[in-house]
Image 1 (spheres, rainbow, N blue to C red):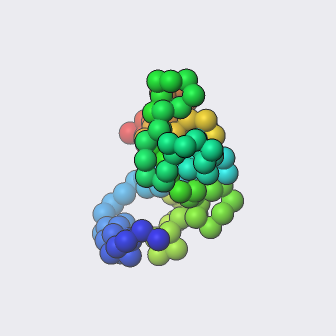
Image 2: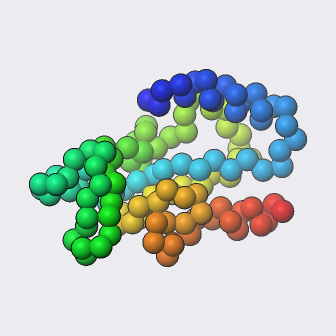
Image 3: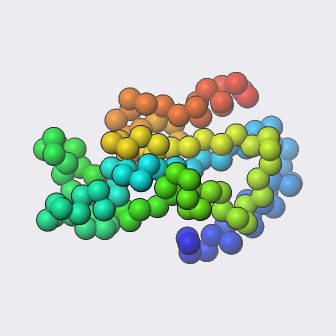
Length: 125
C-alpha cells in the first residue's frame, strides 16, 4: 500500500464530483511478471538490490530496480479500491513491455512505444 493513498484518493473523488470533467484518464502500471525494473529479474547480478540503479548488459542503459509490483492479472495491477471509477473513464496502462521501463503516461523510457494517452487527449480536445 502507498502511504496516505486514502487521503489523496478522497480528494480526487471529491474533485470528480465537483468539476465538469469531459474526460478522466486513469494511468497505471501493468507489468509482465519478468519486467526489466523488477529486482528478481536481476537477482544474479551482484550489484543488484531493490531501490538501487544498475547498468544493464548493453553497458550504457541504467535501470532503477523495484520490488515486483502491479503485475498484470494481480490485485496490485487493479485500480485502488477507494478510487471512484466510472465506465466512461479511459484506462491507460504503462510498463506493459517486459524489456523497457516506463514512467511516463505517454511513452516508454526509450521513446519507442507510446501509450494511447496522447491520441485520447487529442480526441477529446
